[in-house]
Length: 383
Length: 173
Image (cartoon, rainbow over all chains, first blue to last red; front, side, top):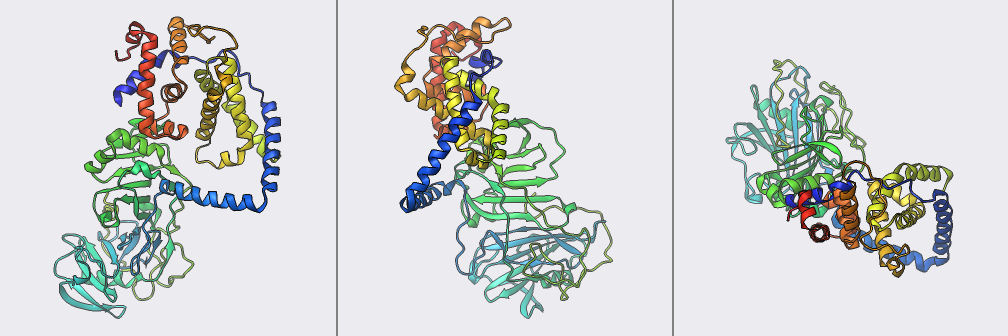
């Protein structure tokens, strides 16, 4: 491939600076006149076609949609008790000095990352809330899994367990509760001051039954994703702008791989890193490193392979560049308008909210923790 | 088409005409045929302007129209009639300047003799700097097909140029 590139570039190099002799001999006025005539003929033909033509067109369109469908890879249809990848099933408020940062949808579990609500640093604690569908569990054992630990105060009237050993993140304080029969939710807290009382407040701020659609303003051709062409999750910012903005469509071979590195993320990260462009893709400056490409033209478009095996699987760095060039923003991502501080404790969730509302009365922000100024990483996105 | 749309169409075509003319020029065997192909393409663009504007990439859409107009024209019997009577070896008129005038003329003449589809691939990849994926989309074929057409086109070009010239240009012998 490289050799072919060089060969072609060398052989045709003498023509690169060549321009045709003189202006084009085309007649724009003639194009307009002929075009108008053709357009009129087309219009008349379509009208004269009547019902038969319409039926035929509809049938053809249906066929076309089916043919084109693979170029816009989508998620698997959720089964009963599973989540829809294109909707957020929960809303999480600010609680325990924490506020939601990112929300990751998934068919078998949905995950929310919370960070310090205090812009000055907060408590130094971060949290991950993971809500599993009925019959799904962190270790993959499914319905037979039971949490091991000591009983904690019920969450919304449901039994809760303070885990003896963490199952979401090592070294974390974790609380599990059966948010519906056979379905477990987890709060995983890390950092100085992480305790069961924090975990309970975060758990109490989780509201069930939301069905908030997630935007996916990005088009990526399915064939460029090779085997990793199923949409298994959408990671999106739901917090204050100071956390940065992220919108990633997560592709993998199947939904079970959503929590592994065998995936490809395609989307937008803002602000873009302050790094020098190492290449030009489609005429736009971009940087590529460790299986990730990000455009530095202000769009923040990024393509990130989860590990070296995925990068090799799609065809290496050259194929990654081609994939990046094929990704298009179909609309400007919209971000939630979230105040850059803890929300007041008086607002409750409403069906019309497109962003997670502030905490309800069952859990309140806990100001007064020592600001640390520590910016925690993004456990949900893995970066 | 509404007046505003016509205005947008005219503005777009006027701005893009030099670039499209250059592509047509490399694709076709002579300047007159390049003009014909370009005229056909911009007329089609007028008819399909609404659809074109809704395309993800308008430039790619128009390039696709141009390439297809060229390939369609090649399929017609008329395309095989040589109006000028010029032999294959005669280079087309090129705006030449600088010390490589002869080399340019030779390469251009050789490119004209590469089969149309292979020529389209070479022009889009190496003179328009389009990635393989985009060329594949424009030609409506697989990326593998683009690569194989590229290999065959380069091989043909190398043969037409002759080994001494190809080697002088740095092409793999």
